[in-house]
Image (cartoon, rainbow, N blue to C red):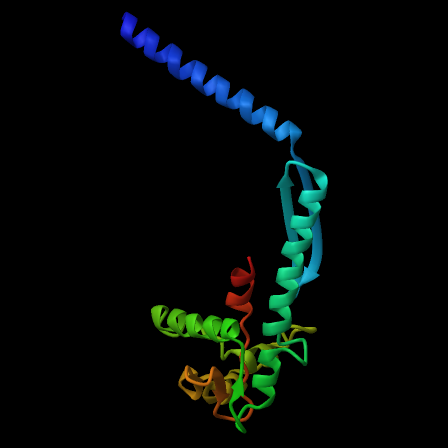
Length: 185
């Protein structure tokens, strides 16, 4: 090893060592708080790291509160949520929703196009047929085929001017479980 290589190696080695020691010292002084809560149909884990325990607790509480807020907008299990109101009005009238819910639905339509229909938020009737949120059951192929028109995304109308969502056919329902959790994260 020539002198240049040795000096270069020594500088890199000591720089990395100093960085690791500094990082270790910072982490040793940090407070780490972990909490879990059942939200959005699953167990949610939130971890906060801060210079003191109180700040970490505040950050974790704020994170859980934000997820709870989103759940109250987009849940299909909470009767007063925006999506529950949209689903209840299916086939009757459009429902105005928040800008946030509207944007998630717009992104959902983009994902449907990108996946050639593989991702579909109008899957609510199939979720109900499978009783995915309950005991679970296997519907017949005929039952699933009969539900197909209710899951057609072209029957979900988003009006950007009014910020409203209209499900054109009775029995249609939106379920954003496939995108809502990622949005909340």
